[in-house]
Length: 90
Image (cartoon, rainbow, N blue to C red; front, side, top):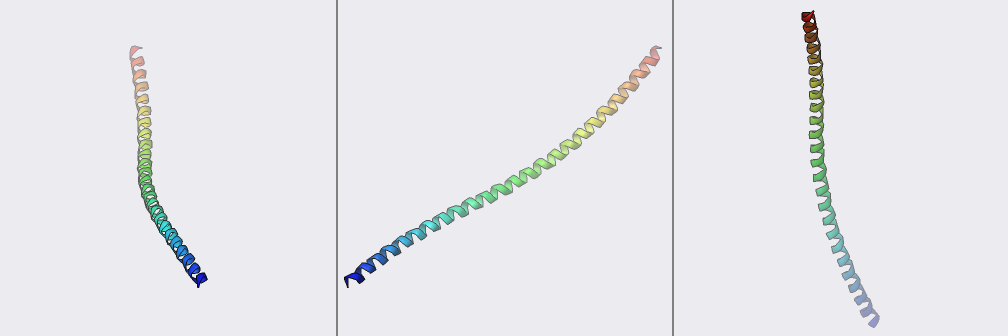
């Protein structure tokens, strides 16, 4: 009888330990789930920012190309103007 009582006490203690471990596991799962949700949100936000930056980078390339073309055109106009001025002096 005393063995049964001892076994029962051990089983109750083991049950309590298992319940505590289950509770800790559940808490850890909830924390992990929360961190994963935050990471997914951050990832989506970073993807949006990257897309925005890529779009503006491409726009900057277009603006730079246009500015370069205008500079070349202005250079041609200045050269032509200088040639006309030199011819007028002659």
